[in-house]
Image (tube, rainbow, N blue to C red):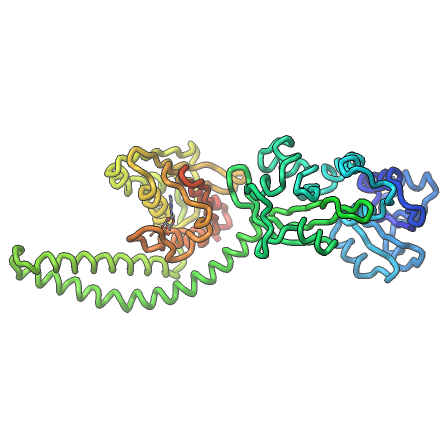
Length: 479
Ligand code: ADP
């Protein structure tokens, strides 16, 4: 097998090492015959040139050579890899570092097969290098009994786990937090699918970290063969939570604006008859003796009409398509004034409200009323969710390299179950008997209008923290 390598850096040295240490069957015998790199002094180039391998600074030469079986692109540059894949001649296979390792693994001879554990051990040294140096994804090596044999450092760092928490445990316990294999039609497991098809498999899974937060992973899994039998898989998982939530929020924006237009129309139509009902009821009551048997009934009509008006006002607020009226404002002050407006409700329920604002001013170019409305919405929800004796803390801080201001509203209330956390920003979603389900969607809309973000962290039974991040004032925002 004649191989040409593109890129003579440390990845090249790594593959030279692999090809030298793996035992390949006699019909394969990989041989590096050419190396391309613009830098003739790159370590891999020097190493190969010393051994008489052909060197060029132009990798496109490899596309016209007909003697090459494999072009191994180790530049890590996606454009170069795509170009090579597109332009290659039909006899040549183009690989990059990830697919290369799996490709060569596939060519290991059958004689290597021994006990599964032994073979995993033998490849351990190479895997260690591969895992830690080359891959920016979470890597798990899993055997057919769903036991995790190896893992790279990325998921350990990310989820605050120790190797001993992971190695030897079942993958479903660690990533899905369940006690039994979790494959199903709606949730296909790469291990099960690969055993059926003997082919690599891709899917998207929701995993959970130690605190139970959802992480959306795009998974690519590859079989590991020993003596033509699948003995395990290598699973590469990429965290796509952020990308997906961005896409979802674009979708939500469209949905919100369509509902908003509809709501505005309906709300205007309803406001007038409601006002008529309300004033007529009050007029009748004025002429009536309060002891009259119908007086209380009319009270009910009045209160229910007021409740309807409240809903309509919320709808109008929600539907407000107008641009925010922005000015420079200190977020710390907005936090203080919002808290002052809801303090009475908190006192009434014997809930302590704490303010923990950062010492520096957090100047934001914003619509003061809208941001205040957001904080009031979060504060009132927190009061609803918190039992007497509980605590609500408003805090502010600089975030994201001092480019953003962060405001958090944390409560010690009932928290939110995972299965509703995705729905709470949707208009009309409510779990309260008298709720409108508009507070959070209005808040979400206002925050988006300020190019900010809103997020939630909550574990059921352990309170909730809503965090808003807003861009700090920059000169161009005045333009
Ligand atoms: P509403 O308050 O009218 O129900 P919202 O849009 O403000 O509408 O809230 C939607 C839902 O989100 C609430 O019904 C509740 O289930 C949940 N929620 C919001 N804030 C909290 C919180 N701090 N703690 C627990 N649940 C909350």
